[in-house]
Length: 348
Ligand code: ADP
Ligand code: MG
Image (tube, rainbow, N blue to C red; front, top):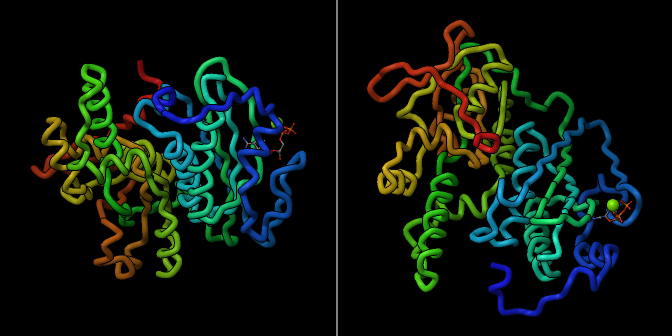
């Protein structure tokens, strides 16, 4: 994909490491008052008063987490930031800073890294976080990108995975399964392209699901909404590996069980139609797909009026005693134990 581009290319070796860092980061402006020193010294300096600090890291590896044949570098930069911010929001915290580390092979010209950093910069601006540092090194093959995100949360406002109580309601934001189906469409088009490179893919019927794969968003708006509603979830997690694995995390850590109702799982019409086309069960996709970056949380029954009829939220189940186990209640009203499939990084 990079080689296809009819544009000027500059070898990274022409700039040297320091020239490269300076070139890629010179447009980043400091926006947060907690950032005392950003890029340019041996370490960033941050100052948070009377707040708890949350820190989270993700590492993305070419060929494992992304495929540059359909993932434009600008989108990759954006997504690498988003996946981290999603973890900050899942703590009910506000994201404030990120660091970005990259390892690149000489296969990538400067212009490719400019695209990557354009995506990183766009996400940092939209989500109002400062890029305060990182590291730059070479790799023998492929691209690695690691983002660390830092956030702040008022004392006692942080939400863990372990606070769910029996009778709590299980709630999820947005809809599920779209990013996974978007990936299925992109993989299919890639195969078609391999056979006939003149065949232009028609992605028009799949715009929503492809965008959910290539340009996901983190639910900063939901954290704001919860705060406006004066609603503190009892437990929360972001949906990165699929609903079933996230439910199991909450249940294990909270020592509770759960009933999840199949008919309540929120699905976009495009997910349903694409699942029909691919002959895949849409519930399986929501349970095991992943990369939704929605927020899954539990709330006390007394808080039900605060979210009732809010289109941002779906109540998909309720929490039970641990000994009741963790089950999916199907449309046919059969009870199936929920198993964690998780994202398939380590499977053969
Ligand atoms: P050091 O030798 O101390 O590791 P570097 O030369 O790697 O320092 O980094 C110089 C400055 O540039 C530091 O502030 C570092 O955090 C920042 N930096 C390095 N690489 C990146 C990058 N890829 N993205 C953003 N900031 C970076
Ligand atoms: Mg360094």
